Length: 274
Length: 274
View 1 (spheres, one colour):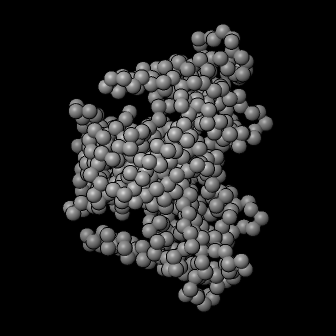
View 2: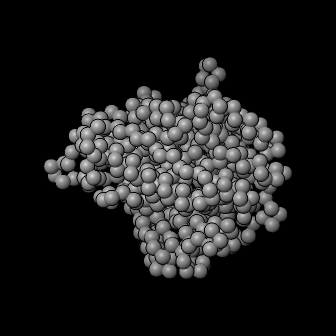
View 3: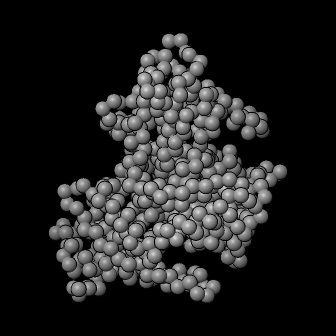
């Protein structure tokens, strides 16, 4: 391996939302940004490494059509420590570790001559592909803010989120007419119960079927896994009936594929006060 | 005008999210669905009729490339009655009126020979273009449920919402780490104040700068109008400073363009309880 320089060239960083795994989720803007990049960073995650990395690669193959195909550099995502109750400290350590991986991947591409300082002094265009959208339960913007030196520019390209993919797959609206809804996490649902002030909750990042901790009466659930992918799973119904069914389907699917990404929407009968 | 038949042919309805007005927001799936349609229904709204209808038409011009270009049928959206306090009744009347316009537009296209019953008995493919995403503060799914006879199928194609366009334009995350956020309306904010249980609120459908009704201390606002369009406006800062600035900019822009679509995110310093 080539020696890794410690100083990075000036980079123009683009964080590209790529949707939930279906190349047809890509926007024209995302496709253009991918083609305009000098280097595309492709994070590989623990258990889902093989299948999801292949999926990201296939997205690149599907849409990279420019005359100069960008270099694609994969890097392994570090594993987040999950012992103890210091959740924010764990996240902070993890972000620091991811930042180092980014820096090393960029520096290595530079050392290998895949990135060269343009004669005109322009910044190198580095793109990072993000599942869903960089604005939603994703660390990429926070990692970008830690890079040293800071990128010359940071541009975000919005992508279809799993929230939208869920609603589209079930052909449902997220909100009741004129009503608010909350987007939250499985942890929040377990720790705090039904969110205050709303009758609709979209729940993400839930590896533990936290809906099972709620009183089921009057609650309807719409669930989806692997949204937009060939192996997509959908279920919906009164929580009392659908909840146990979903727990079973989720466990079997995770066993079969080795990984799962899922999301659900809960709606309860509106409180009498409206 | 040709006589309008009362019975519609079987239709396969596709509701296509088109983003906030930038053709580059369109996904590959949206472009394919537009090209596959036999008829595209293009709603025209009151004050924004000319400019927004032209924008929707330009989206069609940009991406309709199939050998058989679909027929595009514009129709005028009815105006929602806004007197009195019976908001849900107003919405119900309005949805009934929109449903009639859809039916008439489809029937007229049929009468004009633009839609003909396929010999193989397949359904006619009718598409409707929706700003943003059909799942978010949009009536299209509810109108579709009122059509008589019911469509043979209803398919939803997710689009980039103004929520995501706002976050992308400011390069911000919607959520604090692991924290929930609410998506709500200007009316809710005026009637109920800061939403319960969250430190972040995304506010839509606000024609009255309802942020001005909140205590500004400790609150930051990120605002955007005409997101993704050439005339895009952005502002952000502590609400006490940015709020009045945004009120002025919004009034001037609306005066100049004759219409405005805007959205904002409010975040307050996290409560001590975390």
